[in-house]
Image 1: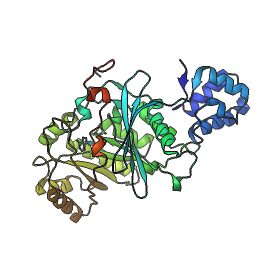
Image 2 (image 1 turned 180 degrees about the vertical axis):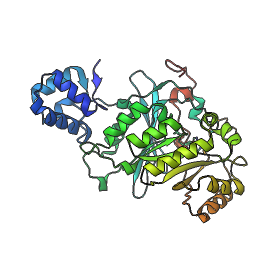
Image 3 (image 1 turned 90 degrees about the vertical axis):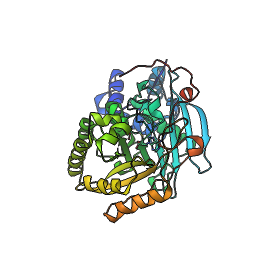
Image 4 (image 1 turned 60 degrees about the horizontal axis):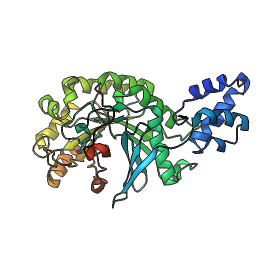
Length: 364
Ligand code: SAH
């Protein structure tokens, strides 16, 4: 079986070329030509990289391919959101969601098949972790979207896909190495060249990895806070038992300090009578003081047989007002793609939705 060159770093391409006997003096240029062909031009066949010799294309083509991940299903919401169900080589499935907005388009990508976190309000959490995605599979989600949206070789002003959010299935900081490698490829100036400001990673708060992320990447950080007291957060986001609120906030303070005080986004899901009182809102402002922050209020997106309800509109607005009066921006996230089960926390692999057995389930 041929290996995918999607998600290959410059170093990997370099090793490959050296193994083909490419001379040191030509190496740098050849790496750039290949990297650019794959990641900027978006070629789907190695033979299309005509900036390199036919001979070299032949060598690459013997063992490698630029074939895309199979798109098993495409669902388009009435609000324009598109969800793709991708079938990986081992037949595991992941979901990727494109969210068009007025001045931008975001792609919500997955980092794992399933999730270990078991957040009680999240549909993906009902699915055991099957495995981590490889950097290739992470980058390939962006490639599939760019193919579908006809978005290759566009400059950043007229791209349909302008932002990447790591908010799909899985906990990205539990798949640190591959996620990091994928992001480095996505922001490489010779490739798709996403600005680091337009890539955001969302985490439930894996403290040791947050520290590393700041040093390694400097992209946007979103943190799923969802509660202001440990007893409530333990129930909503059980990883809180390991990384409680106080420790999380002090790690975030450090992160902000070492990242030019760039704002951290706190995500807060609005759950009726659980975490939505005005005193919760006031407490939220108190505990995050000292951290440059924005609070994203997410109306709860329901899924079959769950135990929660979304807070009333009025309640959400009042909650938001308390926060904005304290000086923080507190937008209420508009649910997108609910009709195709593409909204936050509604992603789950199709096989799971239909209750078919999972492929090769493991516990980490
Ligand atoms: N594991 C990461 C990223 C995936 S979830 C994290 O925890 O941040 C992306 C966001 O959607 C998180 O803030 C998550 O808490 C939120 N979310 C999960 N289920 C939801 C639901 N049913 N309704 C609204 N938001 C939800």
